[in-house]
Image 1 (cartoon, rainbow, N blue to C red):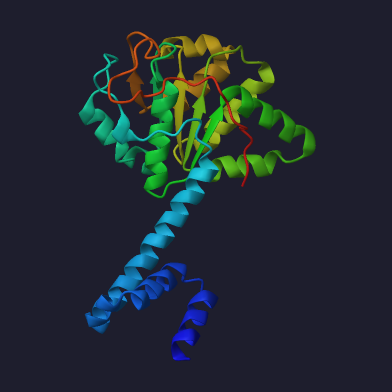
Image 2 (image 1 turned 90 degrees about the vertical axis):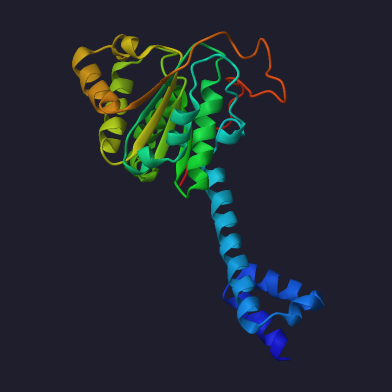
Length: 261
């Protein structure tokens, strides 16, 4: 009776990890030989792992990363200018905690999207909130938000996210309204949150891409000042998959990019 009461109380308190560990201990007689302190420590550790796993699953779901990727699978054999020490430093995610930006550029097929998603995955694993967005979809979400009155809520959600990945930067001309929206997003995040830009267009051409000189200066000053830069080079990784399992390059398939709470 006492055991059943304990189980019910664990369910009521939503201590799912401890409940599962307790049921396993009951089913494994050898654990009964352990001391009370040892068994309690096992219960607490299981609860901690359960909560961490649940949080990671939630963060990854909210991130909506375009491809499943992780930094451990980065292929350094493909000649594209990636350096292990620098990637190891970026994988620590201190730059995100310090609200710095990262600009990832390189030709089509060199794996920019994959690397951006690997960094996003790593940030989620460290408990940081992430959101992947293609720039055209971001502009579309902002346009709709202006029309239906949800613009303040959308901007608040974007600001709340610790790392926003903006992919496909520079694939289309930017209109006057889009320039203003982009300025608002970058200004809101400047010094408070991190932004990762993935683009096949070199940084020196971004001013021309944005268009209007005054806004371009303001946007790029906030985006590039003190930012980390990764400039990839070399042939497309689609031409020759690396041995031991391919690292996907930029994937044309795109999921729903809507921003949700």
